[in-house]
Length: 140
Image 1: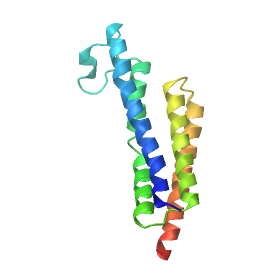
Image 2: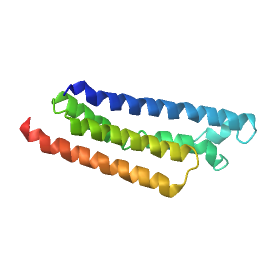
Image 3: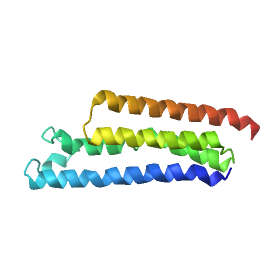
């Protein structure tokens, strides 16, 4: 298998992260123009005055900078050790799809149980990816 195949899901997750980052100022400016928030509400992060629909994109962006770091590291290790196989690539795409689902739920209707299921499933896939990687390392 071409080892660069593992880099496509990495790029897809990076694109999702940038897309969510663009939603943050969009929602903040929209709220500012509607006089729901003021610049001072963001001086030390987000004040209690910031409505949920304005703060959620920022929280989702932070989520995309937390556990996905383990995903990025695993994919890079798969790549540099030439251990990329079809299972690793499939798990990487499933992880990205679950992170997309988590973000879509979070940024739209935000039902906590749906969001939690997508998150928990993504963490499970990530754990299995790491186990797969660690079991493959002695053969390298």
